Image 1 (cartoon, one colour):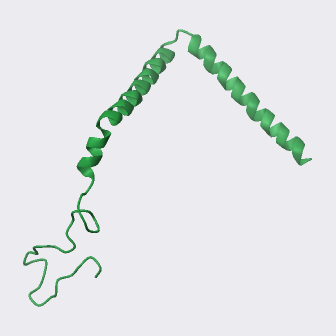
Image 2 (tube, rainbow, N blue to C red; image 1 turned 60 degrees about the horizontal axis):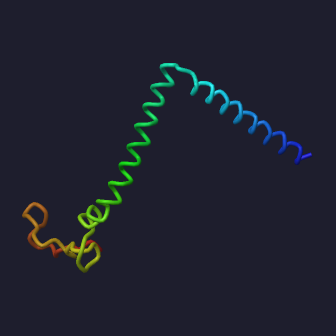
Image 3 (cartoon, rainbow, N blue to C red; image 1 turned 90 degrees about the horizontal axis):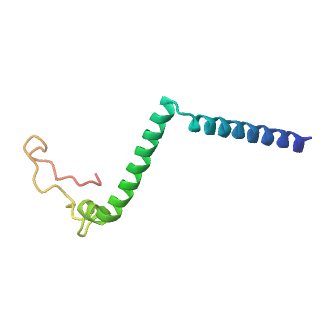
Length: 101
C-alpha cells in the first residue's frame, strides 16, 4: 500500500516538473518582452558570477593576506591586554582587566 502511494507521489512530482519545463520552453521560444527582460537579467547574473569567480582567482590571495592577522597570540597580532586606557574607562584603584575577566 505504501509503495503505490510513493509511486503516485513521485509520478505527480515528475508530471508537474515536466509541465513546468514545457511551459518554460514555450515561453522561452516566444518573442515576448518579459522573456527578453528575463534573458537580459539572466545573462547579467551569469556574467557577474563569472566575473566574480575570475576576480577572486586573481585577487583572492591578496584580499586574504590583507585581512589575515599575522603574528603570535590569540588573534594574530592583537595584544593580549589594552595598552592604554583613558581616565573614563578605568578607576584609579582598579587592577587592569584582561579578556578572561
